[in-house]
Image (cartoon, rainbow, N blue to C red; front, top):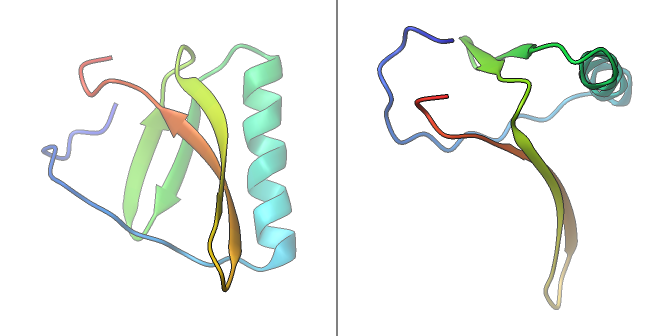
Length: 77
């Protein structure tokens, strides 16, 4: 788990297609092997526990559509 003190944070980072695919592959490998997933975002290493909750969200308005692949867990997990 991260040793960084919990603070409100909302960061979006764009990736190239190949970078995004690599991250999704690593995530899928961890899920299939029942392992923790870790990723670095904007200089902070994030450790996603094995029991995190996964969902997919779709948002739409008059100008655009958005699909979010979300991973959620409690800070104390």
